[in-house]
Image (cartoon, rainbow, N blue to C red):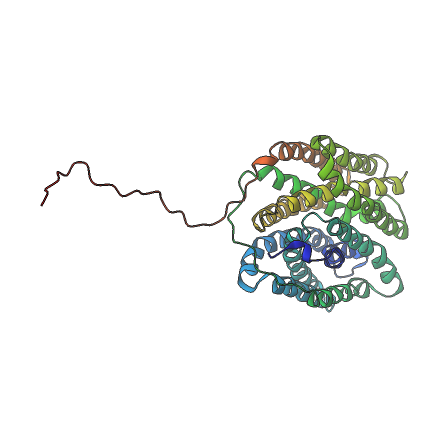
Length: 386
C-alpha cells in the first residue's frame, strides 16, 4: 500500500460504520423475525462469525488479484446487494443474504487495519455502527416490519461506496505473505473476545425477554450496551499505545464484561440497564485487539490481519453456536452464561500471553531465497598446468 495516511480519518470512519449494523440489526430484530425458528435463530447468530472468518482468509488473494481500491469497492457492493436480498423472502434468502453480507464485511474488516494504521476512527466507526444497528432497528421494526428494519442499512453501504469511490490516492496491493509466526495467542484472544461480543449483540435482548423484561426495554438495553461501547472505542486505542503494563489493561477491559455477564446470570431482571451498560464497557477489549492488529500490520502485509481475524472469527462462531445449542437443549440461559464466564477467564489468559510475546509476531513474506554459494577451485584436483 502506498501510504495509509492518504486515507483520511473521515473515510476510515465511514467504512467502519458498515462493519456491524448487518449483525446488530439482526440481533435486535431476531425475536420479531417470523421466518427465524429456534434452530434458524441459533445458526443466524453463529453464521456471521464463520462467514467473516472465511472471508478474511480470502482477502489477501482477492487484493492481490484486483488491487486494494477495487477490493474495498467489491466488498461494499456485495454488502449492499446482500443486505437488500436477505429481506426479500423466507429463511433461505435470510441465511444466504446474511452469509454474503458477512463475507463482504470480512473483506472490508481485514483491509481496514492496514488502511487505518492505528487510527481511532476505525474502532470508533465500528462502535458507532454497532450502536446505530441496535438502536434504530427496533424503532423501524415497531413502526413498520422486520424487513424494513434490516433493509434500511443498505443506504449506509451505498453511502460508503460513494465515499470510497471519490477517495483520492493510488493504492497498490499489499505484498503477499505467508502466515505470521507465533500469533496463536493473539488469534485465540481475538476469537474469545469476538465470541462474547457477538453473544451480546445476538442474544442480549432474548436473555432479558426470557427473564420477563419487556421487548421495548430489552431492545433499548441492547442499544445502551452498544452506546456504552462508543467511548471505549475512542479511548482504548490511545491506552493501547501508552499503557506500559498491557496485561493490566487486558484485565481492566475484561472486568466490565464479567460484571455484566454475572448480573445476567444471577439477576437479569433486577438491573438490566446496569448489566447492559457493563457489557457495553466490555467492548473496550475489542478495541484493544483491533488496535493491536492494526499496529502490528505496519509492514503493509495482510497476513497478520487475515490470520488473526479469519481463524479468530471461526473460533468465535463455534463458541456462539455452543451457547445457542446449550440454550436450546436446557431451556434456560444459565448454563450458556456460565460458559461465557469461563470464556472471559480464557480471554484474560490469552490476552496476557499475547502481550508478553508481542515482540515475536513476525509476518513471513514470500521471497526467493538464493543460497550463498562461492565458487572456488576444487581442492582435490591437481593442477595439470599448460
